[in-house]
Length: 317
Ligand code: CP
Image 1: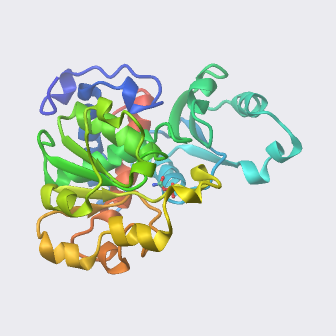
Image 2: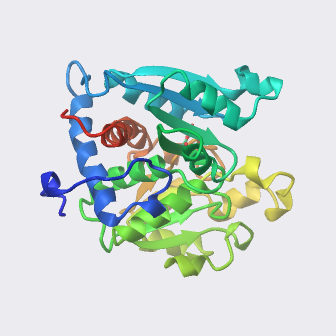
C-alpha cells in the first residue's frame, strides 16, 4: 500500500493498544485518513454522521485535558453517543475493581472504550474483559499512541515525507509514554532520531531502539529539523527528585530559550503538553511562531476521528 492509494489497503486492526502493533503502512493509512477529517474540521459545520450508531465510553483513571477533550469532541463531531467515566467520581472510590467496572459498563452495550490509566498494560487487560474496541489514551509509562500519531501528522504538515528528517526529543526520556510511542512510530516512518536529556532521565540501552543519545542541548538543536520538548513526569518519578539538582538547573541545561531560536533559525518546536513554562522551555519560546504546539492540539481531534472511524469498521465519511 502507498499513501497515494489508500483504497487498495485493508485495515484489519480491531484495537489501538500501541504503535508497536501497527505496521508502517497502517500508521501511514491512519495519517492519510486523518487528512480527510482535518478538512472536515475546517467546514462551516464540522460534523459527519459516521459514528451515529456507536456508543463510546471514555474511561479515564488519570488526569487529562487535551486527550480527553479531543476524544470527546471527535466522538461528538462524528455523531456517537458518548459517556464519560472518571475514576474520582465513580464506584472505584467504593472499592470496585477495574474488571468489574468495565464489565458493568460493557453490559450497557458499549462499542468502543477509550482508556487512560496509570498502569502499563491496562488497555491489553481490557481486551480480555470485553468485546468492545479498545483505544489506549495513555497507559503509565508504556504508550500513548494517538499522541504520537498526532505528532507525526503535525510533522508531516511541515515535512510530508519524514524519511531522513532529523527529530530531537528532549527531556525526561525514561518516564515518558509519549517518547516511547513516538520512537516506535517515527522509526517505522524512517526518521532519524536523537534523544537528549540528563543521564539520570535516560533509559539504559536506549540506543538499542535505533536512536542516538545526546546530553548536549546546543549540539542537538544545531542538528535537528524538529525539537520536541517533554515535561518531567514528576508523578512517575515519585520521591526521586535526586534525579536532577533542581528545576532551575534543569532549565539552565536542557530548557529551550529564545537565544536558541536566534542562534539556530531552522528548527520547529513541538510539545505534547501540558507545558511547564520556564522548565522545558522559556514561556516566550512556547508562544513564538516557531512553535506548533496548538496545531498539535487541533490535529489531535482529526487524528482521533480517523482512529475512531477505522476501528468502528470504516464507514464512508
Ligand atoms: N498530551 C497529553 O496527553 O495531554 P493530557 O494529559 O492533557 O491529555
